[in-house]
Image (cartoon, helix red, strand yellow):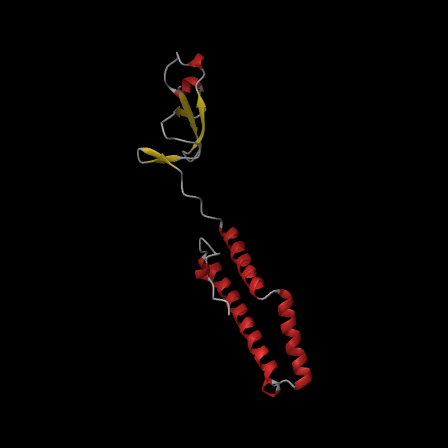
Length: 158
């Protein structure tokens, strides 16, 4: 069956059309079938979405995300990582722990009971990691990596 294909402005195959039998007696130029519509004779292997590559056809690489979309993805990934490891309620609890310990035992953690000092150290590690994730997010916004969710871009969680 005779087919023709329409190419879009990038040269990608936009559609493949069967030539109606009534047109098959006409000359072989696609313009004879659909004048001015940008059709060419269908080539084997060409499918919708493909572009010419050498003497054949291939799917083009995916377009790079817009910088705005990458920035949003980086911020979202940083937020997701922080909240997965140190959820908002745990952050509030850490602040309350420090406030209560300061009011009950004084502002110097050296004077706090050992169990409070150990808990402070654990909470401090989470806060420090949160600051590192935020700082790394700022760096990634300048770098714009293709895959902001890749673990290699982020500091390991404590």
